[in-house]
Image (cartoon, rainbow, N blue to C red):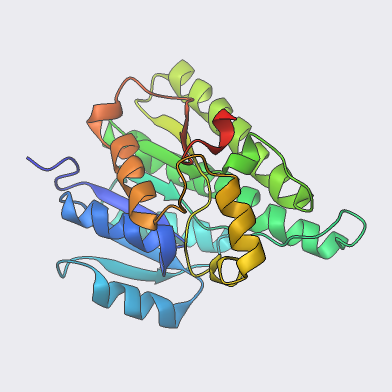
Length: 250
Protein backbone atom coordinates (compact mmCIF):
# COMPACT_ATOMS: atom_id res chain seq x y z
CA UNK A 1 0.00 0.00 0.00
CA UNK A 2 1.17 3.54 -0.73
CA UNK A 3 2.37 5.65 2.20
CA UNK A 4 -0.58 8.07 2.11
CA UNK A 5 -3.29 5.92 0.57
CA UNK A 6 -6.73 7.60 0.72
CA UNK A 7 -5.57 10.37 3.04
CA UNK A 8 -6.69 13.96 2.64
CA UNK A 9 -3.81 16.43 2.44
CA UNK A 10 -3.76 20.23 2.28
CA UNK A 11 -0.71 21.97 0.83
CA UNK A 12 -0.31 25.75 0.89
CA UNK A 13 1.97 27.61 -1.50
CA UNK A 14 1.27 24.76 -3.90
CA UNK A 15 1.27 26.58 -7.24
CA UNK A 16 4.98 26.00 -7.82
CA UNK A 17 8.31 24.97 -6.34
CA UNK A 18 8.45 22.80 -3.23
CA UNK A 19 4.69 23.05 -2.69
CA UNK A 20 3.83 21.68 -6.11
CA UNK A 21 6.54 19.01 -5.97
CA UNK A 22 5.19 17.84 -2.61
CA UNK A 23 1.57 17.88 -3.77
CA UNK A 24 2.56 15.65 -6.68
CA UNK A 25 4.43 13.26 -4.37
CA UNK A 26 1.44 13.14 -2.01
CA UNK A 27 -0.72 12.20 -4.98
CA UNK A 28 1.76 9.55 -6.08
CA UNK A 29 1.48 8.05 -2.59
CA UNK A 30 -2.31 7.78 -2.83
CA UNK A 31 -3.48 10.98 -1.15
CA UNK A 32 -6.29 13.24 -2.31
CA UNK A 33 -4.64 16.66 -2.34
CA UNK A 34 -6.08 20.12 -1.83
CA UNK A 35 -3.61 22.54 -3.37
CA UNK A 36 -3.90 26.11 -2.09
CA UNK A 37 -2.21 29.31 -3.22
CA UNK A 38 -2.94 33.00 -3.77
CA UNK A 39 -1.86 32.62 -7.42
CA UNK A 40 -5.07 31.47 -9.13
CA UNK A 41 -3.49 31.13 -12.57
CA UNK A 42 -0.58 29.18 -11.11
CA UNK A 43 -3.02 26.89 -9.32
CA UNK A 44 -4.76 26.08 -12.58
CA UNK A 45 -1.44 25.08 -14.13
CA UNK A 46 -0.51 23.13 -10.99
CA UNK A 47 -3.77 21.21 -10.97
CA UNK A 48 -3.19 20.24 -14.60
CA UNK A 49 0.23 18.90 -13.56
CA UNK A 50 -1.17 16.72 -10.77
CA UNK A 51 -1.40 12.96 -11.36
CA UNK A 52 -5.00 11.79 -11.19
CA UNK A 53 -8.24 13.76 -11.35
CA UNK A 54 -9.63 13.88 -7.80
CA UNK A 55 -7.49 16.75 -6.50
CA UNK A 56 -8.78 20.27 -5.94
CA UNK A 57 -7.37 23.79 -6.26
CA UNK A 58 -8.25 26.44 -3.67
CA UNK A 59 -7.38 30.11 -4.03
CA UNK A 60 -6.24 31.13 -0.54
CA UNK A 61 -4.61 34.12 1.13
CA UNK A 62 -2.85 32.38 4.01
CA UNK A 63 -2.83 35.58 6.10
CA UNK A 64 -6.64 35.97 5.93
CA UNK A 65 -8.31 34.56 9.05
CA UNK A 66 -11.87 34.45 7.61
CA UNK A 67 -10.51 32.51 4.61
CA UNK A 68 -9.09 29.86 6.95
CA UNK A 69 -12.39 29.64 8.83
CA UNK A 70 -14.24 29.16 5.55
CA UNK A 71 -11.76 26.55 4.33
CA UNK A 72 -12.04 24.57 7.57
CA UNK A 73 -15.84 24.53 7.20
CA UNK A 74 -15.53 23.39 3.61
CA UNK A 75 -13.19 20.53 4.46
CA UNK A 76 -15.41 19.45 7.36
CA UNK A 77 -18.48 19.36 5.12
CA UNK A 78 -16.71 17.60 2.28
CA UNK A 79 -14.49 15.09 4.11
CA UNK A 80 -15.15 15.31 7.85
CA UNK A 81 -11.45 15.31 8.64
CA UNK A 82 -7.95 16.23 7.43
CA UNK A 83 -5.00 13.84 7.58
CA UNK A 84 -2.05 16.01 6.51
CA UNK A 85 -1.41 19.74 6.69
CA UNK A 86 1.71 21.01 4.93
CA UNK A 87 2.14 24.70 5.73
CA UNK A 88 4.50 25.59 2.91
CA UNK A 89 3.54 29.12 1.84
CA UNK A 90 6.30 31.65 2.40
CA UNK A 91 8.65 34.19 0.91
CA UNK A 92 11.67 36.29 1.86
CA UNK A 93 12.77 39.86 1.30
CA UNK A 94 16.42 40.52 1.88
CA UNK A 95 18.27 43.62 2.99
CA UNK A 96 19.72 45.24 6.09
CA UNK A 97 17.64 45.84 9.19
CA UNK A 98 17.96 49.59 8.59
CA UNK A 99 16.54 49.20 5.08
CA UNK A 100 13.63 46.97 6.15
CA UNK A 101 10.36 48.87 6.53
CA UNK A 102 7.86 47.92 9.20
CA UNK A 103 5.36 47.02 6.48
CA UNK A 104 7.86 44.63 4.88
CA UNK A 105 8.72 43.10 8.28
CA UNK A 106 5.03 42.50 8.95
CA UNK A 107 4.51 41.04 5.49
CA UNK A 108 7.31 38.50 5.91
CA UNK A 109 6.16 37.56 9.41
CA UNK A 110 2.55 37.37 8.22
CA UNK A 111 3.06 35.01 5.30
CA UNK A 112 5.72 32.81 6.92
CA UNK A 113 4.57 32.66 10.55
CA UNK A 114 1.09 34.11 11.15
CA UNK A 115 -0.24 31.83 8.42
CA UNK A 116 0.97 28.76 10.29
CA UNK A 117 -0.75 29.88 13.47
CA UNK A 118 -4.01 30.41 11.56
CA UNK A 119 -3.76 27.09 9.73
CA UNK A 120 -3.04 25.19 12.93
CA UNK A 121 -5.80 26.94 14.89
CA UNK A 122 -8.53 26.18 12.37
CA UNK A 123 -7.35 22.85 10.96
CA UNK A 124 -6.46 21.19 14.27
CA UNK A 125 -10.00 19.89 14.99
CA UNK A 126 -10.04 18.28 11.55
CA UNK A 127 -6.61 16.74 12.10
CA UNK A 128 -7.77 15.41 15.47
CA UNK A 129 -10.76 13.82 13.75
CA UNK A 130 -8.46 11.80 11.48
CA UNK A 131 -6.86 10.01 14.43
CA UNK A 132 -3.39 10.29 12.88
CA UNK A 133 -3.04 13.91 11.83
CA UNK A 134 0.35 15.17 10.69
CA UNK A 135 1.39 18.83 10.50
CA UNK A 136 4.54 19.72 8.59
CA UNK A 137 5.63 23.34 8.83
CA UNK A 138 8.04 24.88 6.36
CA UNK A 139 10.95 26.52 8.14
CA UNK A 140 14.46 26.92 6.72
CA UNK A 141 18.09 26.61 7.66
CA UNK A 142 17.61 30.30 8.49
CA UNK A 143 15.38 29.15 11.34
CA UNK A 144 18.48 27.48 12.83
CA UNK A 145 21.48 29.48 11.61
CA UNK A 146 21.16 33.18 10.83
CA UNK A 147 22.78 35.13 8.01
CA UNK A 148 23.23 38.82 7.24
CA UNK A 149 20.54 40.83 5.46
CA UNK A 150 17.61 38.53 6.21
CA UNK A 151 16.55 39.43 9.75
CA UNK A 152 12.81 39.31 9.08
CA UNK A 153 13.09 35.94 7.35
CA UNK A 154 15.29 34.52 10.13
CA UNK A 155 12.83 35.76 12.75
CA UNK A 156 9.88 34.25 10.92
CA UNK A 157 11.50 30.88 10.28
CA UNK A 158 12.89 30.69 13.83
CA UNK A 159 9.35 31.37 15.02
CA UNK A 160 8.06 28.54 12.84
CA UNK A 161 10.58 26.18 14.43
CA UNK A 162 9.51 26.99 17.99
CA UNK A 163 5.78 27.23 17.22
CA UNK A 164 6.01 23.73 15.76
CA UNK A 165 7.55 22.38 18.96
CA UNK A 166 4.89 24.10 21.07
CA UNK A 167 2.19 22.61 18.84
CA UNK A 168 3.70 19.14 19.14
CA UNK A 169 3.80 19.30 22.93
CA UNK A 170 0.27 20.67 23.19
CA UNK A 171 -1.07 17.91 20.96
CA UNK A 172 0.87 15.23 22.83
CA UNK A 173 -0.49 16.51 26.15
CA UNK A 174 -4.02 16.42 24.73
CA UNK A 175 -3.52 12.88 23.41
CA UNK A 176 -5.21 13.83 20.15
CA UNK A 177 -2.96 11.80 17.85
CA UNK A 178 -1.65 14.83 15.96
CA UNK A 179 2.08 15.12 15.25
CA UNK A 180 3.83 18.37 14.31
CA UNK A 181 7.30 18.65 12.79
CA UNK A 182 9.21 21.34 10.93
CA UNK A 183 11.32 20.93 7.82
CA UNK A 184 14.41 23.05 7.18
CA UNK A 185 15.60 23.16 3.57
CA UNK A 186 18.88 24.69 2.58
CA UNK A 187 19.47 26.26 -0.82
CA UNK A 188 16.88 24.90 -3.26
CA UNK A 189 16.22 25.90 -6.86
CA UNK A 190 12.63 27.14 -7.12
CA UNK A 191 10.88 29.92 -9.06
CA UNK A 192 11.24 32.16 -5.99
CA UNK A 193 15.01 31.66 -5.87
CA UNK A 194 15.61 31.70 -9.64
CA UNK A 195 16.72 35.33 -9.72
CA UNK A 196 19.36 34.76 -7.04
CA UNK A 197 20.62 31.57 -8.65
CA UNK A 198 20.85 33.39 -11.98
CA UNK A 199 23.39 35.85 -10.57
CA UNK A 200 26.81 34.18 -10.99
CA UNK A 201 28.28 35.84 -7.88
CA UNK A 202 25.32 34.86 -5.71
CA UNK A 203 25.22 31.34 -7.15
CA UNK A 204 28.92 30.87 -6.42
CA UNK A 205 28.47 32.12 -2.85
CA UNK A 206 25.53 29.77 -2.32
CA UNK A 207 27.51 26.80 -3.61
CA UNK A 208 30.39 27.67 -1.28
CA UNK A 209 27.88 27.26 1.56
CA UNK A 210 26.88 23.71 0.56
CA UNK A 211 29.41 20.95 1.36
CA UNK A 212 27.68 18.49 -0.93
CA UNK A 213 28.54 20.85 -3.79
CA UNK A 214 25.20 21.54 -5.47
CA UNK A 215 21.88 23.29 -5.00
CA UNK A 216 18.92 21.12 -4.02
CA UNK A 217 15.80 20.51 -6.10
CA UNK A 218 12.18 20.65 -4.86
CA UNK A 219 11.65 16.91 -5.22
CA UNK A 220 14.33 16.24 -2.60
CA UNK A 221 12.42 18.31 -0.06
CA UNK A 222 9.14 16.72 -1.13
CA UNK A 223 10.50 13.25 -0.36
CA UNK A 224 11.29 14.36 3.20
CA UNK A 225 7.84 15.90 3.65
CA UNK A 226 6.18 12.66 2.52
CA UNK A 227 8.15 10.82 5.18
CA UNK A 228 7.01 13.22 7.92
CA UNK A 229 3.42 12.97 6.71
CA UNK A 230 3.39 9.18 6.73
CA UNK A 231 3.18 6.54 9.45
CA UNK A 232 6.88 5.87 8.88
CA UNK A 233 7.44 8.97 11.07
CA UNK A 234 4.82 7.99 13.66
CA UNK A 235 7.30 8.36 16.56
CA UNK A 236 8.45 11.81 15.42
CA UNK A 237 6.88 14.96 16.80
CA UNK A 238 8.39 18.31 17.73
CA UNK A 239 11.37 17.46 15.54
CA UNK A 240 13.20 19.54 12.95
CA UNK A 241 14.24 17.74 9.79
CA UNK A 242 17.15 19.48 8.06
CA UNK A 243 17.62 18.88 4.32
CA UNK A 244 20.46 21.19 3.35
CA UNK A 245 23.37 19.34 1.73
CA UNK A 246 25.40 19.78 4.93
CA UNK A 247 25.19 23.57 5.22
CA UNK A 248 24.30 23.67 8.91
CA UNK A 249 26.84 20.96 9.78
CA UNK A 250 29.68 23.45 9.33
